[in-house]
Every structure is written in C-alpha cells, then in structure tokens.
Image (tube, rainbow, N blue to C red):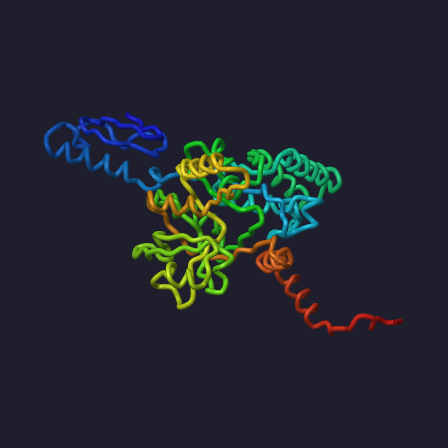
Length: 389
C-alpha cells in the first residue's frame, strides 16, 4: 500500500510517474494483483493510469484547504471617535443572531470559524494584543461566576473559550496602510492561502446555514484560486469601494475572472474602465470586504513595502488594491457575487443598522420587528412637550 503526502511531491507508482500536490495523507485505493489489472501488459497500464487519475482528481481530497484567517484591526477607528478612545471598536458589543451579546471581534471570528477556519490572527496596534486577551478572558470569567446556572452564559463562555484558543496576534508598529497591515501577518500565514476580513464589517448570509465566508472559501478551494467577494453596486456608490471588472465564468454562476481593479473610482472612471458585461445598467462589482488570497500576495506587498522604505518619510501608505491588481496580472483571480449583505459599523449609524440587521436575521426577529414598528408608530413630539412642561 502506497501513500501520498500533502505538499508538492513527484512520485512513481507501478511504473507511472506523476506530480502530487495538495493531498491529504491517505492510502491509494488499489493493490497489486490480477483482479485490478496490474499483472502487466497494455491493459494493466491503462488501468493503472485510470485509478491514479481517479485518485489525483478526487475533488474532495485534492482541493486546497483554507485553515487560516487574518482580521485587520490596527486602525484607530477615527470614524467612531470618541468611542475609540475608550474601547477598541472590535470590542464594541452587539446582540448576535443567536440572541447573545458579544464583542464585535467575536462575531467576526465566528463568521470564519463556522466557515471552517481553524486559526485566526488579529493584526493590531502595539499593546492591543494583551488588551484583547485580557478583555475576552475577563468577559468569560464574569459570565461563569456572575451568571452561574444560566444556559446562555454557559453557551457564551464555551464560545469565548473556543475563540481564545484559536487566536494569535501580529502587531503593526506604525499605521502604514491597509496593505502593510496585511503584510504584518505573513509569518502567521506561512505558505498557505488565507481568508482576509476587516474588523468593522459584519456579514449576514442570504443562504440558510451557509455563511458569506463559506461561499468565498468554497469557491477558492474548488478552483484553487484567489477569490474576492463582491456585490453588484449602484454607480453613485462606487466611490466608497474597491471596484472590479471581469469576464463572467460560463460554468460558474455569479463568478467572474477579474481583469481590472480600481480603488474608489469616480463614476466617470468606472464607466470607462470597469463595466462588466452581464450586469444591470449603472451597476458595478464592488468589494464586499472579504478575500481568500494565496501566500504569494506577500511577495507583492513586500515589494511595495521595500519601495516605501527607500523613500523619504511621509511616503504613500502601502495599500492592498494595487497588490491585488498585480496578483491579477500574474495569475487567475476570481470574484464571486456573495448571497448576503455587509454592514460597516464604522459608518454613520452603522452600529444601529448592523444591530437591526442582526436582530432581524436572528432568533429574536419577531421581538425586534415589533419594537421597530412601535417606535415608528409613536407620534413625533416636539421638544418640551412632555407632561408637566
């Protein structure tokens, strides 16, 4: 019985030489013997090739496995000032779909964990790593000791344990741009592909039991390719997002091969350079805030970091979008229209909109909807009209 090991290896099996890559360690499903046609002759060789081909092309075992996720959280949350001076935005509390109040970072991390991610790296500012761990551990201890016997507290404590044991941190010592923050996670990622998330974006899937991140990861694993989540977006909003154009993949609904990427283009630029055949008029494919990227992105980011280091102080920050465009120039990169919605908690009223969306998508939907209707039905009273004034 022969085995193939994960990673690139050139092997010789019964006189047939081939390349094996990305395989889990498992036995080949055949043995020598006349029953399998391995007794010699041309027919035997054909059967050898048939079974080896079946083995190497087995999608379940040969597909890439996305195990790691990076969450960038080194920004100072200027749009949430002065809240960010008191608590990191990633620790702001929201009531999740399961009815439990959680820090934002936990909700984001669970998006990854429930999509198959095993290890998570948070890229943070200096000193924040200990603050995250201290606050998460303190939250867990308070739940256990102050809410003894409460099922919801025990459930949340278990979830926090699961999160803490998966976490590690990378420090961005200076705020040198989003691309530089991603580059800081290179040691954690190593030579594997990884899921990239933002610390102020939450996602709600439109597909039952399939997270938004799972949709992106699933395509990346099947196609062994970089994948960016996108949504069809009205033209007056393209100035807020990275925007892509590409060719629709005939055999993959909602999937495009990316050709061009521009960060926050003007409407006129989008009209000239970023129109994608098949989309509705005046709509463009804009980033959803979620990517699966190969480790090769760090080579490209490293080149940009090196160039910036050679320039005088105050040089441009290292951004991710130019690196993504260079990756597109070098290899196949896909975009998938994710079935779901994104919410930016740093936007004006972003926390409010996100909390309403979580409530409407969760177990307390009826109570949330009733509260919203009651609020809307309440008559507007001018200031000073309260009883007694």
